[in-house]
Image (cartoon, rainbow, N blue to C red; front, side):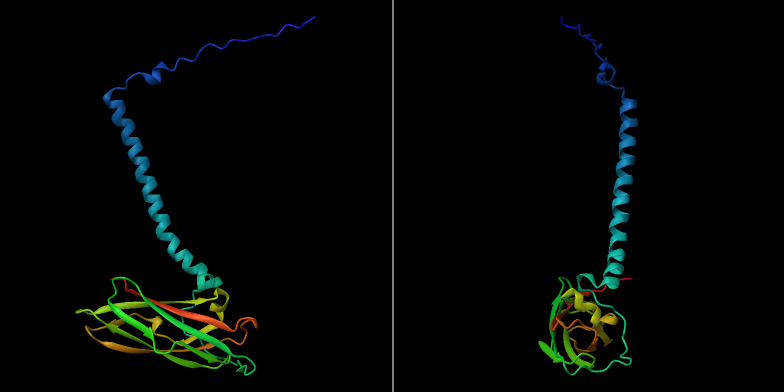
Length: 199
């Protein structure tokens, strides 16, 4: 014997109201609501984008991510020079579009003992016909080494202003913290010069 199966039929839903043409006033009201939502989304995205840059900078300066170094002068206190190790620091440079400078290190690399203060020179020349102000942004690779490179004096601490055709030799005094992991024997310090933001 086969048991009976109850079959329920559902009445079709009447969606014809949503298909009916709306009045001009209803369409204008719906469009205004949509426009307000879009403005809020755009404003929120813009605020998020502006907040991301300072948050990223703070994260990188705390953790050393992306090779960002601390942009404050360091002091060498009670650290002994580790003469048992040598670390090679290579120097590279870049000028971002729109700056109108030539910029390069006067030496490609230096080998030093951790804890010893060394000085290297960089040269910048304004090749435009106007005063240009630039800001140097340093980065170190490998990223883990960035927290161990300590700058005592650096042109990256302040904006640099060059008159038309002016050449400036800029010193960098730094040392490598002796706590640098033993497996790191080479690092690259790179400076990118950007046009300083006009205030």
